[in-house]
Image (cartoon, rainbow, N blue to C red; front, side, top):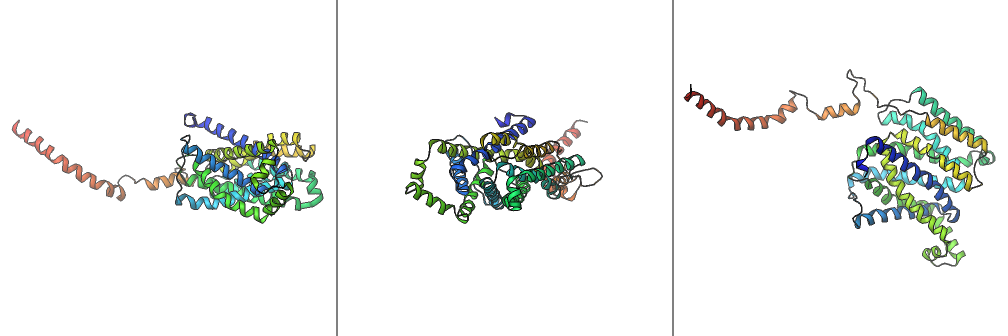
Length: 373
């Protein structure tokens, strides 16, 4: 069905699906952590569920997947470290702060990514309008921080995890776009497979570092359960429903995220992640009492408005007389020029073979001409 969409419709569909999954996953994970305060273990559960759904769908012939390949493994191992660290810092932000703090950290990332887009991904520097829009986001973020209760009471200590999240998500956005351009999968399942398969070992390590196994053991003893499965049977039905929903949305954001990333620039993809948080803000105000003050919400919307005025920078020109981009020059390098040594070397065997095949025909035509003056 995706192949039947026009290019513009495909971009819109990718953006909408990613936005919905991203916004709702933040809310669902926040609810899950309220009942199950084990961030890394919750993520591991969602990763395993996604792997199960992918390979299960392939087993029953519902979907095609890519085979594991060492050539693709190397770049995705690097990305997996950034991905796992980003997910972990995001969950720690949700566990120690409020949703708006996570959004502010994400709102600061487009400004950094826009310059990294120019340095590493071949785009022009942002225009004056875009710089103004990104500065508006920064102003809104600092305005929000000045109204945040944890910031006022704890200072920068309340923003330790959001700051780490900002650094990691910035690298992840730029490097993720780079491997989308350099690694060619046959299916959309490819990047989802690699990130999920390689993602769970680091998350188990984070769980051990954060003392989650010890906390889980204490919880089991408190409930009188001898295993995790027995503990799960003791949980209310709505908690189990949230866990299942989180697994489904987690799988969805894997597919929609890579699909959207392939269709837009790194900066645009980062901005989409910021702007799609509007629904998160409204639902957070309704659900929790841990939301920002009215003035904080105003500053937060200032961030989102600034992001909406950003214009995607075009690909950078290399400065030659024809105005070709670096990608076009690279393509020219692979195409031999007319009359070049490479073209002559390539065509000469074929030409000799053609001349040899044409000789009998030329000879026969000559004889016919001589016999019929």
